[in-house]
Structures are given as structure tokens and as C-alpha cells.
Image 1 (cartoon, rainbow over the protein chains, first blue to last red):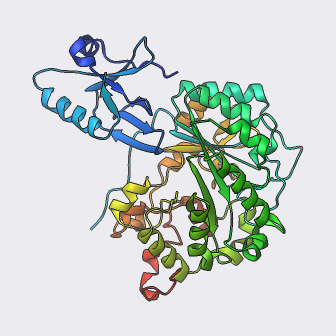
Image 2 (cartoon, rainbow over the protein chains, first blue to last red):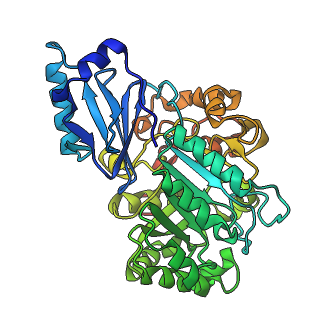
Image 3 (cartoon, helix red, strand yellow):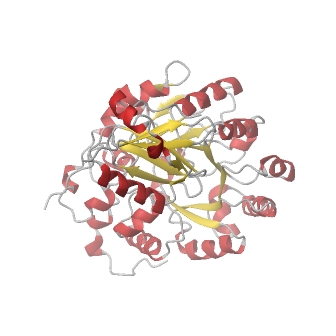
Length: 97
Length: 347
């Protein structure tokens, strides 16, 4: 349904690790990649959330139909990624898969 | 102090597309934003073209389609079009005049989880509503709402375009909607389509504009799509966007497939293209009209303390009243607030 977002190859390799794929987009939420980061849409509340994550976060279609949120985890980005995931979880936009 | 205007790269695609699916309508509302309503021979996309367009919206990850018209339910294939959008995961919001709702139609719509329904009602009383929407419509609209309510559609609202004619009935309308168990949405009256002809008669005076703003600030449960009313920043966040979304977040598609920056800017100079001969993506990213709208700067507003709330307001109102887009919204409350005693236009 939603095209897979292209992520730079170096980032994608990092993101492909299993430990980075434990978050999936909540069932009532849609998401797409934009230049600034990720744009979420809560279909129940018709609410947009702009997440200015740059290239830190990406989207990957999973064979089970869900969408995983992947992260570019390096020592220098670990803190930001953790904060972003915490924020998205709090807003109900993602959940642990 | 000068505030920075909103400046951003265009999104890959609109998040929301307003789609006038037909020009056919069984009513002749005096303030209709469409200009060719009732012209039954007007070109409209056929079912296959609609499906192809929805396929493109899916490829672009457009989140929502706001269907309007005309009266969408006058198209026999409309429920199938809505169904097809849902099959792609696209949320739909259908704006209907309510008079075409019947048990069979509701049965067909029942269970569509991604469907929102907005029924237009332009007064809390028969006299007021019928003066705007036509004789006998008030009763038929309420019958339509009652039929819809039997199926408990979870996302349903009654929408009133606030004009001089119905301003005094805002509170009553909210009560009426509440009695039916649906939300109220108040929309700003704008000079588009047929509404241009009745602008002088219908538009709110300064005192009423201030009163409406105050009412919306005090009643957060009331929906509004307006980017203009200067309610608090926190409230705006709750209500949604605080900047004009034309060509930035949304666009409008007419029955024949032509694309404009928003439903209120459908004059020829603003036409971006037509989806029957080019892709929406190309129109969105490259059309001269869309890029012009994105570059509008209402310079005079940038020193205003309210700038962060409205970013200059509605360019469509500015264009109609001043023939220029880079002007402050002529209905901006800040421009006349000193002349309006507090609570002067209390609803």
C-alpha cells in the first residue's frame, strides 16, 4: 500500500539489525518519509505529527503487512534515537512488535 | 519584532486532497463555494478514472480524501469509489447536504471504518437554514442525520458555515448537534464560487468575527478547519494546523480532474493542471501556480504579535477583497480589534 522509503545504503545496513526493528507503526496510524523526517497520520483523530528526525529514522515494509520503524544507531545518535522512540511511543504512533 | 514566515520544502505530496467528485446537486445553497453546481452536463471523472486517481493517491501516500461536490451521493458509484479508497488505507471524509441519505445508502456505508461524514446544516432553526439552503431542507437534513445516527457512525459532524444570517444561532446549533450525538464544526464563510455573489450580504462584521473567535477559543470541543481565528497557540495545536495549507498540505480537485491549491482558490490563474493528462505528483511539485502560492509572504503581518497563530491568514479572502495574494487577510481580527469592545459580538 505504501511504498518503501529509500534510505541511504550505509544507514540501511545499520537499520537492518534486528534490535533496531522492534518498533512498528500502530495499526491506526499511517506514516511516510519526507525531507525533514517522518510524517505520521493518526486515522482515528485525523491528526498529523511531523517528526523532524532527518535521516535518523526510516520505514520498512514487513512481510506480515506491518511497517517497522528503523533507526540509524551509532554512538553519537543513540541518545536522539532513544528520545525519538520514546516520544513516538508516548503519542501512540508506534508500538513494540 | 518581526516574525519569520513559514518556509519549508514542499512535501512529497499533499497529505489531504479535497475532491469535488461531482457538480450535480439537488440543492441550490446561496453560499455554495462551487461555481458550476447544478450543471448536469459538466464533465466528471468516470469510475475507472476515479480508481486510477486513487491509485496515484495511494502511490503518493496521501492520507485522506475529503469528498465534496455537488452532492457526492448523487453519484450512483460513489459508495464504490469510497470503498476503493478505503481498500488502499486512505481515510475519507464525505461532506453531504444530508437530503440524499436513506436506509439503503446507510446500510451500504455501515462498517466503513475509515469513513467520516459531515452533514451541512446552516442554522439551528428551519427559518434560518431554509433561507440559505432552500425551502424544506431543514427537515430533510435532520431526517438524514437521524438515519445516520441509527447506525452510530463514530465520526460524524454537523457543519455550519458561519454567516451574518446564522451567527446568532451558533450556540443553539451546538445544542442541536449534541442532542443528535454528533460533533459541531464551524466553518468560516469564504468568497468562492457562488459565495462571491452574496459576500456583502453574508460575511460577518468585525464584531461578529471577534465573537466567533472568542466562541471557538472557549469551546474546544467544536471543530473548525480555519487557520485564521487567533485562538491560543495551545488550542491551535489541539485543533490542527495554524497556517494556510493550500499547496503546502492540501489541494483541491474539481469534477473534471483539474487541480487547484485549495477549494477556495479555484479561479483560472490558480489552476495547476489536470489529473487526466498529467500526474498529481508533477502538478504538486512543479506547477507554477502551486509554487507561487507557496512563495506568498504577507510582509505587513510579520511584525504582528498574532503572526505565529495565523501566518497572514487566508490568501483566498485577501485575493477576493484586494486582488492581491500577498496581503494580510482583510478579516484579520488584529486589524480591527481596538474598535471592537470585548464581548461585543458574543454568540
